[in-house]
Image 1 (cartoon, helix red, strand yellow):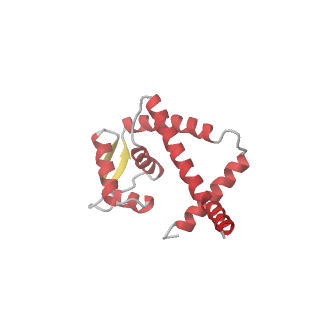
Image 2 (tube, rainbow, N blue to C red; image 1 turned 90 degrees about the horizontal axis):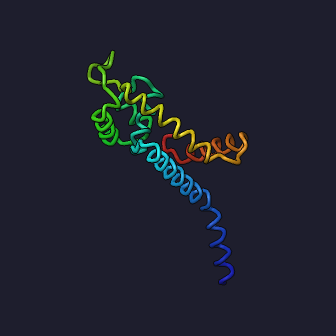
Image 3 (cartoon, one colour; image 1 turned 60 degrees about the vertical axis):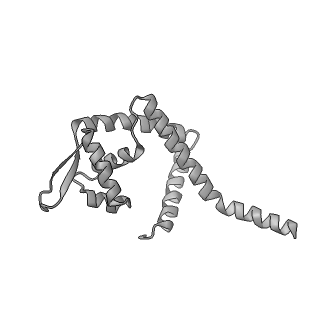
Amino acid sequence: MIEQDQAQDQASDKAHVPGETLHRLVHAYKRSLMNAMVDADMPMPISHKRVMKWIIRIPGITAQQMAEKSGQDKGRITRLLKELENDGLIERRPHPIDRRSQTLHLTAAGETRMEAFRTVEQDVRTRMTRGLTPQQIRDFVEIANLMADNLDPCG
C-alpha cells in the first residue's frame, strides 16, 4: 500500500511540473529584469513598463481598451496610468471620436525610458535563452501560448 501511495505521489508531482516550472521561470525572469533595471539606474515596477508597452503596441489606446486587452482590472490600470502621468511618462489626449474617452500616449521622456528599457530587456532575454536553438525558442513560445489559451476563460 505504501509503494502504491508513493507511485501516486510521484505521478502527481510529474503532472504539476509544468506549473511549477512556469512559476519558477516567471519569477526568475521578473527578478532578473528588476535587478537589471536597478543596475541600469532605472528602477520602476514592471507593471508600469507593461502599461507603457501597451501604449506603444496600440497607439491611441484608451484605459478601457487596455483593461480589456490585458485582462487587468480597470481600477488598477487607472492607478498605474495616474502614476505614469504624474511621472511625466505618459499623457492623455482627447479621443478624436468619443468625447468621453481619452487616448494614451508616451511623452518624450516616456519614449526615452522605454528605449533604455528595451536594451535592458533584450539583455535579460539573451541570458534567458542562452544555449537554446531558435527552434527550441519557437517551440517554447508555441507551447506556452497554447497552455495560456487553454486557461483563458475567454479563449
